[in-house]
Length: 234
Image 1 (tube, rainbow, N blue to C red):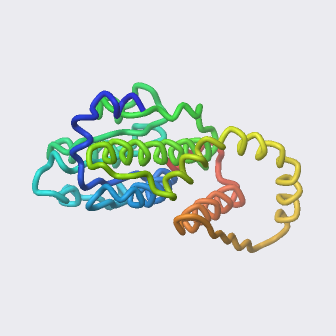
Image 2: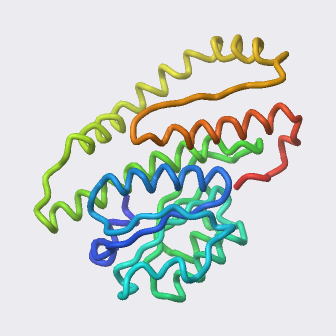
């Protein structure tokens, strides 16, 4: 998290923070906002869709230096996203970007952030970028918690310890996941002839509903024979 470490004196003053994105990135933003909220170190945390965000949405605090914005974008070039960054910067709001594209417009605008480095997205469902964004948001939440804890003398909670352990187990988890490809193919073959599909989920932070929504959207895209090169979702 070198981007945050380099400006720790600036970001540690943030009391109200927003996480914004479009499409799959907005789904990640909603999940990330929940993680940030559970740190207990912010007065206000909000997730916003760039398609419906206005300049007034950033006026969470009388002092702009105490307001922050985390912007997510797979391409870093989506006009709605770059417009939101411009609006925030015009109000002197601290902006931190998470993007998958090195040297993109968003990265150049913010001059502070983290690259997902998930590789190019070929199909419409931005699965790699979404996963990377969620992981980085979890690390960002932990970073803010650690900085604020040192500043305010707070202790690590059980939920934060659990999140830290989950992040440490990610390599093992992905290794196990790769071994389920044959099972996934069999499940896909069973679903191929069906006209309707219900996707259910339940889990930590009650945010699996957002993941379920993302999965259902991607299933719909694939099943309606969408052009795999059509970059509809950012």
